[in-house]
Amino acid sequence: MYEEKPVIKNSDVFTDVFIPDQLNHRDGQIKSIRDDLKPIIKKQPGRHVFVYGPPGTGKTCTSIYITRELKREGVPNVYVNCWETQSRFKVLYTILEKLGSKLSIHTKGTATHELLDMLKQKLKENQVVVMLDEVDQLEDEKILYDLVTIANLTVILIANTETVLSDADPRIRSRLASADNVEFPKYKSEDIKEILKDRAHSGLVAGVVKQSQLETIADASSGDSRIAISVLRIASEEADKSDTGKISDDHINNALPTAKQQKKEKTIDSLNDHQKILYRVIRNGEIQPGDLYIKYKQECDRKSLEPIKDRTVRKYLEKMVQYNLILAKGETKWRVYTIA
DNA sequence: GTTCCACAGGAAAATATGGAGG
DNA sequence: CCTCCATATTTTCCTGTGGAAC
Image (cartoon, rainbow, N blue to C red):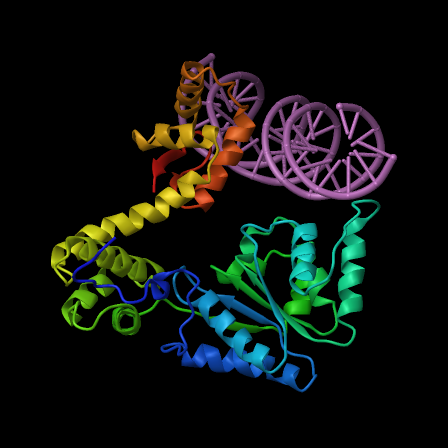
């Protein structure tokens, strides 16, 4: 597309995976984690790190930032997102794969143990840092025990709440008792503004966005840098199309709901047909469990879909609550489900 | 007070799914 | 193609809960 007055200089800086060269506003956390991992460079054991805080507070970004530093010192690292990699087997497999092991996995015998042994063998000489993002999504916490007992392996566990490990197996907790707990609180509005400023500086043409506009975005993002950046991205893309050479207040005001909506749609996309039906029924207004199941079955009839059993419906609803798509308030039959 | 209802959510059995090897 | 592995998902069976009905 030909643009006479482009606004975007470099769209990479607005993507989720972008890690800036310089991380501001997280000095304390960076220092802590750096100190925890520093011994590894000298071939000494590192200290495990437990990182927690709400979404969009730079947990993942900071962790990757620091492990990249270590990489330059010759310490390899592996990033695992437990949202996609939930089982013990998969986590081990991913780690080995990313460490460059050739895996011709014969899924015979106790493959999981074999993987564990392979990993131990591999790390006899060399150190590695393993990041487990969204650990609360792990379905089998045993993997934590596995990893924490491997010599030369240091973990960075990333989660939304401080309490995810509190009801873990005591053996795991005691192993992690010495871990460094690093909190990532919500950003202040001014912090977000600074972050946006940096991104605008490297991603946008100079002078296309006003300071006051960045402030507007920062205020509306309620401390979530991911939302803030995606608002700036969407507004910039609109401005690019408009060919006026700058971002207007309207672009920003329109981008806000779009950013939040996009975040939601992304999650809804990952739902299966039954979950989508449930979501749509709940979207029609708050509803109680019994009515919900009846309406759900009617919808299935209409689509000649075989309805799933009520226990599975409850599992699906539980999942959707976790994803923050719906809310469940109250207990037992007085529970009502509403859209989040 | 006892029983019943309508649901939540745990445990485990049952079933589906997928990859490797034949 | 099928079978033998594994994991993943769904269903069955169950216990617990708290208000309502008796």
